[in-house]
Length: 447
Figure (spheres, helix red, strand yellow):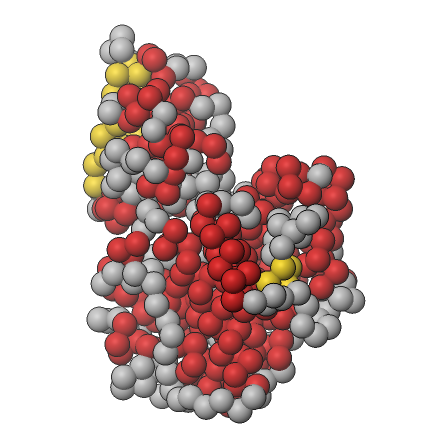
């Protein structure tokens, strides 16, 4: 019954030397991918709005990724967390029991804290792992019922991950970390009702902000409960109809959930990706064009069919959660990119017309990472492709080279080709950095 304390002891003490090399490499991959996503979202409309809010609150000296402005540390965590999730291009921990975008609530805390006091790259990587392992364990313990009840798991559990990273970097004791968890857990929030708006990306941003504040408050002696996760009126009891608290600590220090993380090949909801993969494979194999297609049937897991059920999206944010739109993009575009999931992409007349030829069928025999797609051409040919694990998932991972390309696509236009390449190389050798803040400051654009 001491799961909160046990998880707090793990998070507060985790050090770089405790990490297997495979976990260290995955932390570097997560850094490259997250920073690519934060740069891609740095100038989204909602990001700009939050930057202006931060400016109204007061000045600060903490880097805003991809921008010339600065903000206070909590607001920098908010803005950078928002920017990294707003394009829905960020990493996804997506086993059977939960779905968590693990980097978006945690890396912003590491970045903000690194500019407040010196932090080595090794400590930064360890703090990220502490946060990622904490939030994914909370997500698994809350179970799929937590999400089905209407909570956005990245927002709720991200609060705990962010607090874990903050506590690690601040050198908090296990007891102080447990109280930081209490302060973070009581702020945990994120409602699925706001999907399709800026509200969704606010969730990891607010998790980062609140988790950093929880750590800072605990460092100053601010008190909270020691059992916020497993308590009678704690996180799991209140926010999950069927919690499994034993999963909070099962295999702790032996099972590393970061090794099961996934990275997105496309800037849309991960549950659309198996269908996009299948259509692109069929196009490559059979050479048909969108104009030659009369019908597409996509069979997907019922959960995927529901979450991506925006049949006729009208905004870019809607389009990211539209399987029909994603399928149309895969039929029309050579390579699905950020531009296809903007407001202009959502209302593009060509894509809108192709969407009408796509039918989605819920199939409970398929996993969330799978799809069976059948394309019928105007001359009566039928082609079927089955994807068991979409690209970017643990069983079909994106190679490091693909993450490099994703990073340079996002960083080059904002930072310049040469600075982007130098920053990428610095990310890959992050564990060797004496001062992680040197990397952080390189991510800001010139004023």
